[in-house]
Image 1 (tube, rainbow, N blue to C red):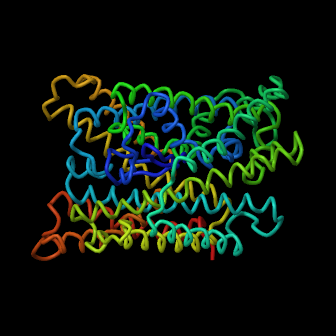
Image 2 (image 1 turned 135 degrees about the vertical axis):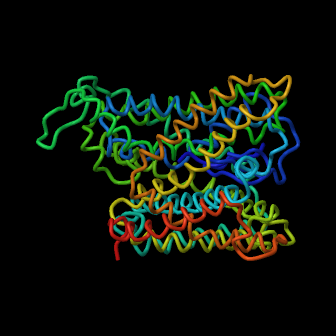
Length: 520
């Protein structure tokens, strides 16, 4: 995952979807307390970069090597680079042609496909980002295991769950006080997360061996023999990386969030392009360069965060300390801001009558107190659930996060497609109608490919999570004044969709239990 949305003075990490501007890691920020100073191109680029780069980059070598060889990773990055760009461009175009829709990613879904679909997107992105914070908890506790060997092994053992829980409730306490990430925290966090990455790239370049990189370029067979190019094998490896790469870019939509703070609207598009290309280059280098030093299998077996393991093996303990400290600074510097943004999602959905009214409650500091409390409770429950994951807890959490985010991107791309086909295109729009239609179509196709690549395990988990949220919609609609029996709260197409979600949810929980993703 990459990271969160941002306001003019803030740089969280991946989050998305709810508050005021179009939104980002689905859309995020509510522009609460944002600085009124206008932001120039350099400032916008910094915000875009800071919004995407987060803890995920520190474990990128292992995450990618676990599924793909050097050649397959190159193919994966090419597909991701093109696909994610069209999703990002979807938000750029919608911000231009639908500037009135500012209440988060779900507004596009609601206006385009009805209140129930809007609810599913609002709820899905809220839960998605709760899983993202759980992933951060796993990462930071795995990192602490370096300093306290054997205490926080895996990031999801009992001490890890306790430690991550303490951090979560501290963040709630700070968020309820109306705390905000100031400029100083933003600068410290950005330096703390970028500097170790740049040092890592430079040092790995000094020992990179092209012959090692080319060895088993397309992977190895079970008997250890190097594979030659085979389209089916390559695409299978590529599919295995898609949830990782999507996680890293969740939040790219957040570039449009600060458009109201920009000195020039043209700078917003430039910043999105430049920031995206810079981050893509960083991700590709961090992912591929270690394959010129270690074999794919060696990297795939490294502990989290793998960047630290690589540094320690090749440059000594100081390198691991540098990376691990960078991870801690990066995650903690964004956690509070992310928490603040995450609390806004149910708040805005409740104001629109698709979440229960109590989610609109705010304390004297203006913080969405009820929303923040339930966000923390959900995170706490997920942290406990995380203890029962089989295999790598970090990979499981980021995979679920990515799967939960996919419908949000898909609906936004479909909405742009619908706008281009059915609505009157605004005169003077920077993007042509043809551009909008093409962007919507390609973004839709890429989103559908991500759904295919996700795999049945995580799709079934997502189906169950979406199904259990339906009662929130029913309560929200009742409290918004809807009369009659429950079925009257849904249109005919929504009844069909609701039935599908419930059936898939039932199948999903049964499948998830039997598939072994979670263990007793």
